[in-house]
Image (cartoon, rainbow, N blue to C red; front, side):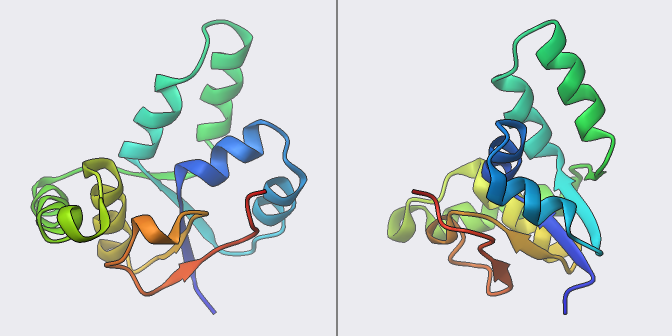
Length: 128
């Protein structure tokens, strides 16, 4: 059983939208839950000012945010280099993968195909 989960942006967006599967999954966990600084940026890129932003500010507080550093940037860049052509991996997903690996955390995502470089993945539910 994993001791840490790194939660990908797609699961957090579903939670914020009130999707039952995401709410149940996140609220039932008994492990440390982390998010990448990249995920924080992705969430704020889509937030509206006012009440929605305040809710997001408070929501982020429930997670340990893993900051970017040189080692993560190097690893993420190499993941993108190695998997961009074969799997279409973007830089943000490559950085999230590098974060999961560096933290020895299980990646929780709905998009396994975006993370061919990670073997420790949980898909908490299927997107319809």
